[in-house]
Length: 285
Image 1 (spheres, rainbow, N blue to C red):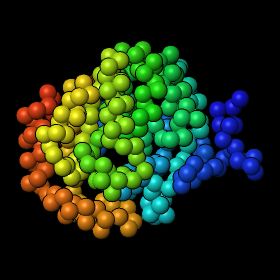
Image 2: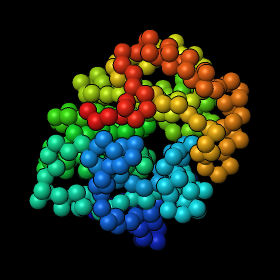
Image 3: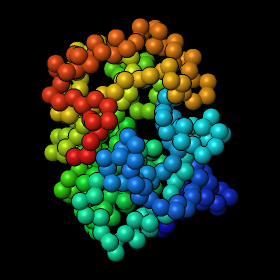
């Protein structure tokens, strides 16, 4: 059975489908490895099996790289599957990627809900394992990542990052309404850590926090030893359509500001074993 045939709609058109509120389109990408620049400039490549995102966090910077205003305004409601991603990577076998640092992913989540059926990210991981020798960092906010523990164990150099931006599920619902709960994410990264895989929790950006000390206890209970934090700047207007006021209301309710951020980070520095901030925290392993 073809990788995508199980997702055909009644009109037998496998190129477009829908999952929940997300419109999904299958596209032919021109490339799969992108030379890393800017914030990710310390890496050799970024790798994005998808574009767009079903999670649709309302502050997501990636929305502002969308190719049209319609895509930007509807961020979270569309996803493009790079259906030839594996084939593009297979072409790299002639010149294997040895000791190259790869960040997966920079402008999407490699564990989109549809990944459970497609296994596109999993097929890429297998290809990297069988034909290349890369230094890989995986960034996600999905518990589905735990599915691939068997593959992670086979990499010589790998780190799995789990994004957890707050200790408050109320805040999470306001800013990340379509994402897995904090509890689910922490459980998944604990499972990966317990399997002996190098892990990190990224609080990027750090959203309003209810109780910093209790939050650190939750984080430490996962067994993770590495953490990254960076501030959230609502004043820079990085909100997709119609979400700015909701964000400001939630931040006002939590009395969240730069000083509160600094206070919380100070607690993190005292309680967490390793804390990186901003770009330096994301340096390749």
